[in-house]
Amino acid sequence: MPNDLVAALDIGGTKIAGALVDSGGRLLARTQRPTPARESAERLGAAVDGVLGELAATPHWYRVGAVGIGSAGPVDAKAGTVSPVNIPAWRDHPLVADVRERVGDLPVSLIGDGPAIAAAEHWQGAAKGRTDALCMVVSTGVGGGLVLGGSLHSGPTGNAGHIGHISVDMDGDPCPCGSRGCVETIASGTNIARRAREAGWRPGPGQDATAAGVAAAARAGDPPARAAFERAARALAAGIAATAALVELEIAVVGGGVARSGDVLFDPLRAELKRYATLPYLHGLILAPAATGADAGLIGAAAAGWQLLGLQVA
Image 1 (spheres, helix red, strand yellow):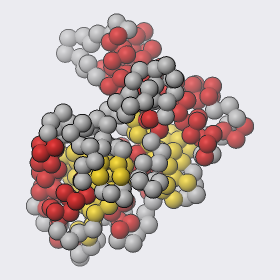
Image 2: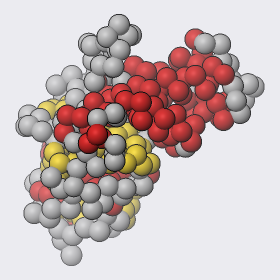
Image 3: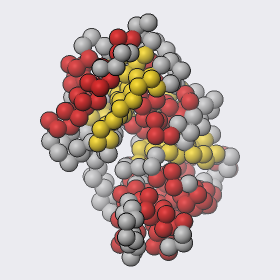
Image 4: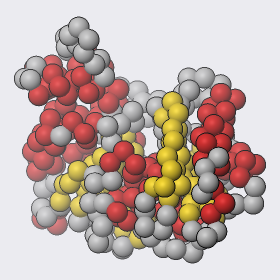
């Protein structure tokens, strides 16, 4: 049954994942490797090669009709290049051309990781059936994508909805993107942990020093840990409210590793969103956790691949 699967790649600051995905969004095979984010372009390419090689070694590879890539951004979908903020060695890197060399005649599609999670949540998750949605990933970085008028709106270069680089603090910290006070500088997992440490939080023996450890401490009532999450929630709420005011949304969906902190994030986020989303047409804005979990990036990348084959799934 050729052409009844797509190969999906999800490229982020901590992992490069791959899967074979059918037209119902089901993953038939899955693999991943750590992202050598601070190493050379050659090492990064080798990691992508390794993931594709493992997929190609499965007995299902002959059924693959297209490849969809969701990558940390910014990306340039027209040029087929990526310049992820958290992967310094890739600047205007020709990722689509690289992948095409490895997969032969298969068509290849590229979207940003934010639009990928939006595609996944609109196809299979919390935004299913919604006409206008913002879907976010809060993890090593902060990204987002938009569904407008019932369809994924990724913009001319594939970066529309990149909420992580909306500035919410005019005098805030410099961001690797070159701006200042971006949502990502406050609300990413890396910066939540940094803020908590600066305020005096320290993980106990054997405890996690990342945002997951901060979340556990916040759940136990640790003041610096709670303050770091509250500050992150404020930044996210400001970005969500600004986006909703601009394009008018039904729902904001939040996923990613930080979102898996649960009420530690969502309780202050709901409270802060009420403070920022004050216009009458924003009062009905729904806030929901993502439903596609850790596979959101792969499902969204697969959606992009399916579109190459003429199947509109998101």
